Each structure stands twice: as C-alpha cells, then as structure tokens.
Length: 174
Length: 174
View (cartoon, rainbow over the protein chains, first blue to last red):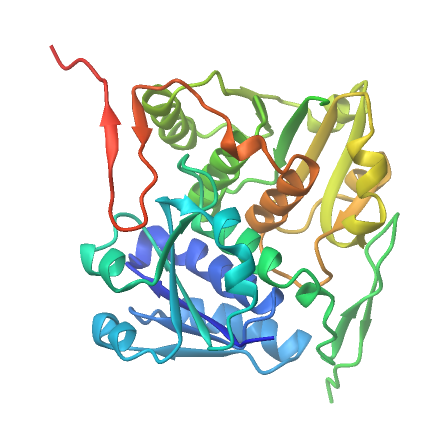
C-alpha cells in the first residue's frame, strides 16, 4: 500500500479550529502518518497530540509556509477533494494501484485556483456541499478499507462493546 | 431503501457550531431527509437552510427538547455511532436489509449512558477517536453507496470537472 498524507489549506483559526482538528484525527484514524498544515494553530496541534499521546502511533503534524511550492514539489500524486471534481468512483482503481505517495488536499472554504491546476486529480464525493471531514474519511476508507482496524499500541485502548463504554488504561500516573 | 434520519446530541454552541453544521450537511448530502437537534442553534439552522435554498431538496431540521424520550419512542431501529462500539462491518448486511426507519445518533463529546442503553446498535467506524462527521459519512455511504449521486433540482448545480470550478446558477436576482 502506498503512503497517504494530507495537506490542509485555508484554515481560519476561529472558524475552523474544531474542523481542522477533526481533519487531523480522521487522517490519523484512517491510516495516514502525516498531515501538513498551511496555517499553524497551537490549539489544533495540542488537541491532536493529546490523542496521539493517549492512543498511540506516530502521527506527525508539520507546518508548511508555502503550500503552493510544497504541492509543486510533491514527488507523488496529488488528489484535491472538491465538490466540483469528478466522482472518486471513476478513479478508485487507478488510485488504489498507484505506487507513488499520495497527497490529499482538503481546503476550508474556497480554495485558490492553483490547487485545481496543480492537482493530478480533482475529485468529489458527490457534488453537493458537505464537509471536508466527510470527504476525507470516505476517500481514505475507500482507498484502504482496513486501515481503521490498525492497532496503535497506545496506553488507552478501547474494548469494543455492543452495550457500553470500556477502555483499558495503561497510563502511569506516578 | 429504508428512510434514515440523524439525531445530533450534546451540541455545545460555541465549540460545536461548525461541526454540527457539517453533520447536518453530511446527513443531507448522503441521503437523509431529516436531522433532529437536541439543542437548537439558529446559526447552524441558518447555514444549512442557505445550502438547501441554493442546492435544492427538502432537508428538514427539527429541534427536539427531550432526546431520551424521543429515542425511546422511535418506532424503527436506533444506531448509535461511537468509538466504543462494535465494527459496522459486523452488522452492515442486517442494517441494509432493515425495513424499519433508521435513526443514527451522533454525539458531540461524551454522551449520556442512556444512549448506549436505548440504541439497538452501538457501532464504531474503528475504535480510534476521530470525528462524528467522518463516522456519519462512512456509515451513510456504506448503507447506501448511491445516495450521494442524487439530483436535488436546486438553482445551483455543479458541473463536475477534472480541472476547474463550474456551476450552473438559475437563481433569479430580480
């Protein structure tokens, strides 16, 4: 399986703090090792790192100052998720067979036009407005339907249950 | 296909305004006709209704004052999406074959324990923390993989494109 990373652009601190946090956690939970943020936000980084500390894994958040240059220099394939794109279903097999690393771009509101131009794929999950979190989740799940079953080896571990909330907690509070 | 509605509980106005809006838009874009909010928020309702006005369809937001009573009285099946639940993959076929209306509950942070008790299914999309928007999107997409292709007949309509942003706009600004 190829490596998939996410680039989040257009983050507006007050408006998007929680959405960007959900974008990060979704990336992590569906198999990505890394997300790039075009605008740093210490509260987002704090929330995500707290989850990583508790639940494990080596998910990395990296701030980049020039997303356009970053995307131009990306050596693998670039997927831009947009309600204006073509259905992911049309490209799913070729994306699953891609050997180069994938970069998935999710914008906040209206993205600059260079994103459409630099992307190898402008792809939608339906052409109705919904959510970059929803689009990213479905995309990652379609690219790798098993990624969310991965074990992270963290101190907190959910015991799946039909009836109640249960976790093993191996944290040392000494 | 059975009818699917969503119940959003635990909305905290300042923190969750945008997330609840994304929950609503995701419900709409993936085939639901109705969402119930246990806590009214005029800004969420305004944002969602603006999308419905532009893009069409008859998506309804209804406020309910007593979510526990509402769930107890639900005549169909109740699915609670939670990272503590059992994998959706284990129940997908029976849910797809269910003839009664489905109610999908998505909480904000920690939900009260009655939700676990009243739900017919406590179901996860993986046992890692991520996003109720992500969980709802994947669930709806797995239950009906074609719902997001529906035509809404709205005044704004995206022309899917591999390269650029394009919409037909039939609004009358007279």
